Structure formats: C-alpha cells, structure tokens
Image 1 (tube, rainbow, N blue to C red):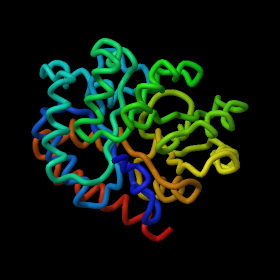
Image 2 (cartoon, helix red, strand yellow):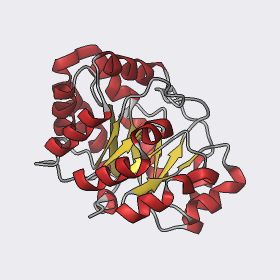
Image 3 (cartoon, one colour):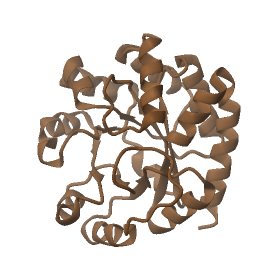
Length: 258
C-alpha cells in the first residue's frame, strides 16, 4: 500500500529528512521515531552516497560520516524493516541514481516495496530520463517523485502532469542548506502545478525556522526540512533525537494554524 497521499490528508504536511547512519543507525531510528511522535507526516531517508551533488555542506558532511561508519544500502533496508514494525506514516528514500544502479535497479525497487518504502527521490535523475526507473517503480508500486526547480520554467506543466506521490518543489537555486530568506517566485510555480495535477506539492531547500515553514506551506501543501535536522544530529550525536522531537513539534505547530 502506498501511503504518500495520507501525509497530506490532515492539513499542511511536515516532511522531515535524515541521513541514515549519521552518527549511527540506532540514532537514525530513534530520530525517526522522535520526529513521528512530534508530528512529522512523512519521513525522507537519505541513503548515504560519496558524491551527493544536490547537497550543501551540512548534508554532505552527514553522508561522509555515515559512509565512514560503514553504512551500506542493505543496512538501511534493515533499518526500514525495523522502523516499519511501529512507524505507520509514509517513508521515502532520497538518494542518487548511482546507488540504485550499483545495487541493481529491480532488486533495489522491489526491496523498497517489500520493506514498506513508498517513494523514491533521485535529485540527479533528469525528468527526461525518468523512464530509466519509471516502469520498475510502477511495477512495484513505488512512487518516483519528481523535483521542480526555479530553472524548470516551461517544463513545470509537463513534470506536474506526470507526477507521482508528491511533487518536490525546490525553493532556491543551488544546493540544500538553511537560508536567511527565500526569494524565488514560488507562488507562480505552484500555480502551474495546480493547473496540471491534483498531486500534492511540498517545498524544500532552505527552510529552517517555523516562520519559513509556515510561509512555504501557505503557498503549497507542506514544508520539507533537512539540513536543520541533520545539523542537530551533527551537534548532539546520540542525544539528538530529543532535540529533533522538540524541533519537529515547533515546525508542525507552525503549520497547524494554516
């Protein structure tokens, strides 16, 4: 069963990203559960990769720390199996095409179905090449989630028409990371999305404060936060889940008023 739509069923959604294995898989599991308890509607799990080109320094550092710990794709799959014993909300993987290729695309995507992963985000996969994985994702009921960036322009309508799961709207040019303010004309991007699909859309890249989350969710169906959560893991290590719980609660509270 693909759960992604349920994340957007009860008002504006808060989507939380973590890099698996930073600082270790036990802390990842505890951080996911803390986020869920405190209102996260969907969890994005990053499978560490040695060259995460879409990521800024915070998440790049998390990838390198996780790889130094020896985190493997199979260990991440085992983590999801464990989480699915009690975590009911949607979970998706965010990783890179090479991770899927090197594991074997059908083996990877069929395992996603078996363990309860609802979607796959591959930021380095151009929209024009998504059929590389699209048929397998459809076969196994895993949504291949598309990204729309400020540079997408005339392609936004086409991407929206073919969207699955939810649309990830990239708020700013460049890589992930916290920003003081987000100046992209996101409302016009969302308007084109709305004209071409009923699939929900959420805005990510650069959101770190409750006020930013509220502003972005007011324009769309939800807010995605990664770097600010990963920074807490870097700062507090094994003690981070309690801090992540409080942070997620403050972000979700900001969305409840919308």
